[in-house]
Image 1 (cartoon, rainbow, N blue to C red):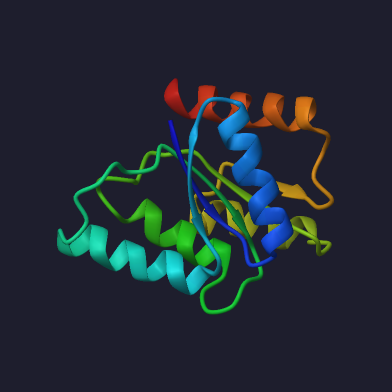
Image 2: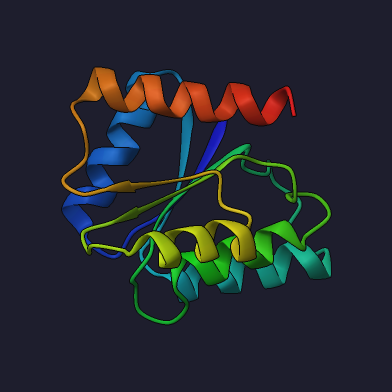
Length: 135
């Protein structure tokens, strides 16, 4: 399974990419929401012919486009619209902000940083992927 990882903090991006590989998946890292957005331009125009991600994990607050904006666009991209999407944030969101983001952007789950330990994070991700596959 290929994972789209969009995170502007190099340490967190590298950690998530490493966990992805340890768990047998292939990371597709982007260092900003803008880079992920530019990649989506290629996907939508047909200029991208490589393997598409089957899961997305993104930071909310990044340079360029925010994770929720990228998520909203993923949901409107035919070839990606059904993939599970997880957002991460170091900021405290109100219940209203969280609900609005999940509804408007079609996000499956929002988790807080610091990230849970590896076993808990894997369990959360596996649950999100399984739920989306059976939806």
